[in-house]
Length: 298
Image 1 (spheres, rainbow, N blue to C red):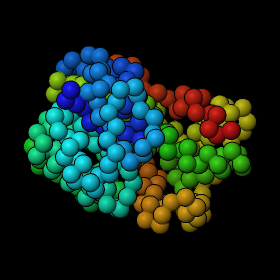
Image 2: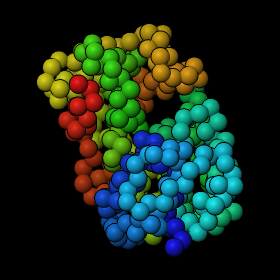
Image 3: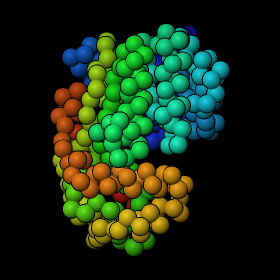
Image 4: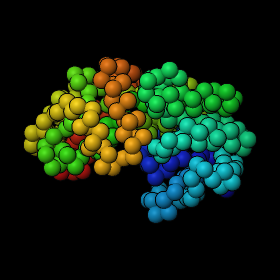
């Protein structure tokens, strides 16, 4: 049977969450159309991944390919109605996503749900935001139906800091006194699933968590979930960069510092009503993330 949906980066944090949301029927009723219908049979969903052993919901069709494999992408897009488009972090992710959009248009795809970033802009000092803006522009020019999810910093991104939290009882980041409305990936995924099943595209949406928290409060709430104090350190960028270099390539360290510098200026503290408006229930607070992910910080 022809696939209705294609989920890219299906073994990545957001792609896997979108698949789980579809499988769980977490899409909500929205005024955009019958988004509350049950998820299509899983054999009508394709998952694009480079991981041959990544767990997928029962019956989901695995497509082993990268965003550079043009012929495999053409096969994956055959008969697809809607796509969730995200990409693993690489220096070429904008180029890859733009080419994917071109292939989707050639294949007759009707709707692309694009993962973007809050404050994506051509003139942003942060390269990730410039890259997202370029992809948004390509999607707008393609003529395809578009839902653009401009996501704030994901709470799950803090999992990268888990070793330091676990070993030193310390949450360190170069954010000064800024507050951030951390978005839970589960809310992002539920909104994406709703958009994929909607009768028409939802347009550009700013997605945030329900409250803007300073990082000392984030550390306090994480500590409460762990049952021990966690101290926040406003780490100088060079020290934070040194810690990141253990796991990330140089370009990604620099890009991450640019994003944190942007957030430290206060731009990430605004709160959008999009999650409750689309899903019909409040966005998940950071305390829920801290409670549910506490084992990964222990």
